[in-house]
Image (cartoon, rainbow, N blue to C red; front, side, top):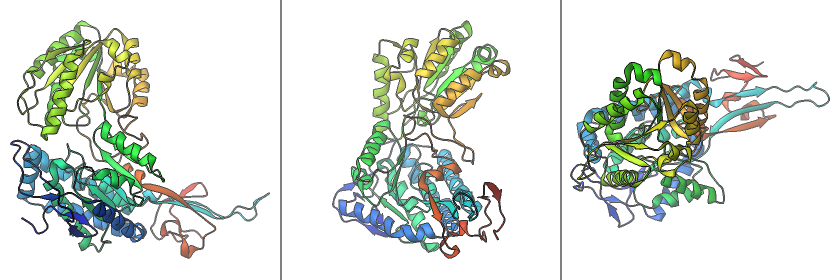
Length: 527
């Protein structure tokens, strides 16, 4: 056991000022892991936020190249963690080692993507409108703009992705890339994993001579409220439940200085299967869809929780095929007992609803989650019944049969915001699907054709976000290079001497950026 195991990470040091301890558990057995994690005291929450605030001026002003080196160093430290680390993650989450190895590669790849963004420099969005002293009736002064980091960011770890959406995950990576120190609230479901990743981040910070408070991490239940309320915190990143996300949004809005919360919360990710596709390959679609529903025990925010189709013999046959596929799927261990309880409750609510029929799936029992498929009356969607709008986090999906294309459009319009929507169709019917696509663009952040939403590629063009309740702010994404935008704000410099301008805006263009100069893109130095 490492020195200071279970202590909070504050200002480059370890702290255990309180007496209340927590334990992470083996997800399969429920056995506590042999580490006492010390819940952060109010004083430690304050110290963590203050350490981030103290680090902010130097970190924000640091050359983007140095931040890139730091982020790459985190990726290297993460990749260097050994088999014992992988075993710990597997034990805390019941996820297989292959999944964890893939997720680690995704996490370090995400970090390296942000290093590329920093070296490229387009995140500055530099704009220069040069002075026009001769302009009539009034001359124009020299006006320049670029983007800078907001300030310290509070990040909340997700349960279902112990690496990619947690300690060194997308929110942390984007905030650090933007020049924002981070205070990370470790998820109670995988505290041992979080500790090892946090230690890797701190090693990278020390190796790259970063300010001591550039990354901080606290443990504990109930410490998130104090963190979000702290005046030093300037933004929040969250991945989790709708209830948890709304609570953070309300706390942030009630502050004397309200701050933005970028929360990914709830999505049922509807899949629309079109008639020609069902006729051509209905059995294949049923098999592929079932595999997507049960992948990772359904513990993905992009899990396809709703399947829509127009009434036909082919759709009826597809439902029977989907029933058979789901019935053949085995039970799986979920991330933790709390997730299983939530899933069991969601399944029970669906079974109890008079407008919903249980089609296939073993009775929910024991310590594992059984896959389920239901069919709901179309009127429940048309009337926006809350139960069909809520995510059941786990290996379950609901089928809805619509009378015709017009009713399908009405049902989609009644849905809340989504992370994803999917169209499965043949070329001819997809070519005529413009009206459908127009509705789906309004409802989701990522639209798919002839694929399945589980699996989010980390790349420049990816959007992992969407209208409420999928996220609290549909203008952002938590995956892909554009996610840095959430933690930047524009700053305008009017009539500034060269010596006081950020490098991104100096006439000499020392960073070699593509800038908008008098309305025209240019990499040239100004004379």
